[in-house]
Each structure stands twice: as structure tokens, then as C-alpha cells.
Length: 171
Image (cartoon, rainbow, N blue to C red; front, side):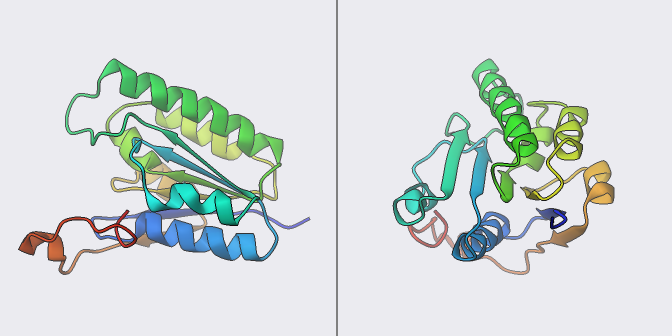
């Protein structure tokens, strides 16, 4: 039985979700099953159509489709907590080879659920399951627990010049 690892993609730069999607596609091509949970997000993004091409890819959004800046609304908290409970079950079930917790770090930062709940879910996963946790603000406890941590650093971004998010590139 293979050993699963915890990866964290964090930082202010672009590419955290994109990197997790790249690993997901690579895993799918290798014949693995992937569960991709998106916290906070609820908008129609390109990756939502991946199950049309990959039957072993499951993606679920546990967000209200708005960016949280400041105090989250009760519906944000309910959606995130429901998602985390489902993800904890998915992680321990062993049904998936890779589980992505997209924007889990941001959800933690805004207090949508508690770090101890996330850590319990990660520690309770089936031994072969790889996990990727994405989002800015990765807590030090998660960084310490992880086997691989990559920090995306923004050097330059065309958003500063007024370029809006583009379909197929940013979403």
C-alpha cells in the first residue's frame, strides 16, 4: 500500500488552485480517483466541467460564490462546515486517492471552521490518501504537519494593470 502525503500550496501569488488541478489531472491520467472540494468558491468555473472528461473526478463547491472579506455570513459558515464534515468522511473512506481541499486555508483564516477540525480530518484519512490544501494564510500548524509546502510569491500580476480574470486561465 502506498503512503499518502499532505501538500500545502499557499502564499499571495497566483497558481495555488491551478497547481492542485494540475496534480489532479496527472493523478486521473494515472488511473486514480480524485475528490476536489472547493471552500468559499461557488461560481461557475472551468474545472466544474472536468467530470465530463474524467469520470473518476468529483468536484463539489462548499461556498456561497462570493469572496469573504471580513465577517462571514451565517450561510458561509454553514456551507463550509457541511463541506468539511463531508470531506472528513471522504478522507477516511479511502475511496479517493487524492483529495484537494481548495481554499481551506482561507476558510480557516476567516473562521468558517476550526483548525482542530481540519487537522483531525487530515490525521484520520486512510493511509494511502494524498491531500492538497490550498489558499493563502496557511496556518503554521498545517505547515508543520505537511510533507510538502510550496509558497506562491507574487512578483507581478496583470490584474494590477486592470486585466480582469479570464475564462480558461483564471477561472
